[in-house]
Length: 223
Length: 228
Image 1 (cartoon, rainbow over the protein chains, first blue to last red):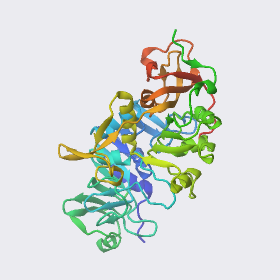
Image 2: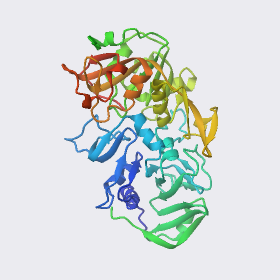
Image 3: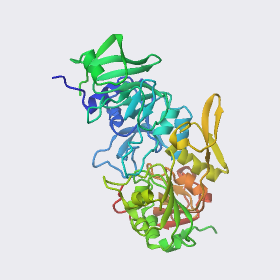
Image 4: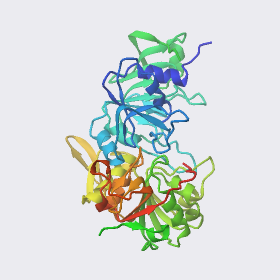
């Protein structure tokens, strides 16, 4: 039985691609877990849409401050060199091209890089867009962290998104519990495949066509 | 002498009447003016329009505003209610009794900033070509489409901060600031509730929002439970 990556495992894998000196926005959900897994020696500045530039680790119970929260309302600490601005300035930073990478959660990603991650179309319930659109339109690069399939086993890597888009043709790379997949002009290219999984297994869980890179690696995480 | 301190929450809301538009700051509980929200619940103004990032924070502090159908319109970036069943305001939205304009959060923040900065409208790429950009003027700049978004202004703004002085100068703690400085600029009457009213004027390098944008300072140390 092949064991897919855990939520932390997917976040760990995404964090390995963050480079020293990058300014990175982490979306709510799985992406915020990535801040704990950047390789030692790399200094990454984590930005939060509510104004923190330099989000530190989640606060312990005795250091938790209800007036210091991140985009997911988690009580956090401030990293060394961190600073706090207001929301208008935080989004000026996002739209203005000052964020190198945003790691966002996703519901669906299409082979052309379209992203749907804001409206699940839950009947009778209100909508929530938050900062996802500004990030997907404004960040230098959009990388998505998500489960490869829905809870019901339906694929999320699609020929075309079915849910309303967050932004068109914005995603460059997708990290899932089964694979690392790049969005290229030719479509999805698999860079890493979970240990023990076959190409046919992954194709069966993916709607869009997959190209396997000649140097396709093995996906594994220590957490 | 300038003295913006007011003695009570009732005095902080003086002049607030039915039909007005109110801005309320707050993100994840930080900077949420919970005492002013609760005071608004005890007030009798109706037909209100609220401009708030997440509508459920207001419902959490002042449920009677929705139970009594006193809010008729909202501009926000989120109006998902708590739990799986529809909340009072979600039902009113479904019925058409509550009009809700959903704005991407960065657009929302910039519309408020623009309102306070004398910019009537601006173009942003966010939501161009998508559902939330529908019905808005689109122009291309450097080959990239952008939608025209209009400024937001209000009669009142409610903020929460750590400290203020008699001139209305504000010091925020942590992430309390969020939409507050822009809302103070964009409103006719900006009211800030604070844990500490400074006996002396705040030193200039500790001021995050200058008092010229702030009209009233109310001492409100208690926040109690903040429901998200």
